Image 1: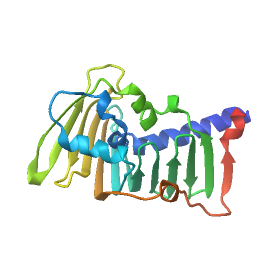
Image 2: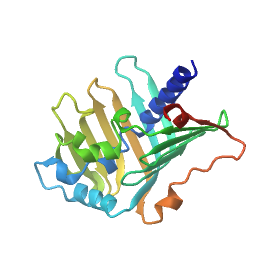
Image 3: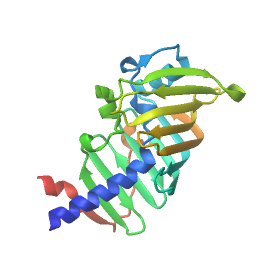
Length: 225
């Protein structure tokens, strides 16, 4: 019974986290060398190069998930840090960090920390999975937009791709300001970034999750040992 309840808890936390990170991770996840680029994409190529060099994108964000079947809308706001293989989110009284091996989620409403083994196969949006070629079917193009913006379009006709179409909008400095995506069942995901920038720093310091010392800890890694 404990194994089943812990597994359900883990899945619930993981799915709620994915709603927040699904589109955002596209920025740091799609490797240039594995994408079929039909046109010149200097802004997108520069963005990818910054991640390859170890820089970290940080921004305030708001994320909307619009369910095409139920009409339900979920909204999340907070701050995000995205590295080549790591990411951290703080918002809505929750904090989450994934370092490629472990997923750590702090739920402030319950003063609880949930630690679990990070399983790539359960995360379709993981940078590590995409770097292995999960999204090599996307065609990429970009074109000038309004006010110096650039619109980057990623499209796939592969029925196994997570998204069928993605638009990344970058400002005149090449920083992402908005992402719009449509998945295979036509759910819409929109993420907006404010005061976004690429920074350099020690990942060990940036990707730390601060939690209260008296928080309850649930270590799901014990279930698989």
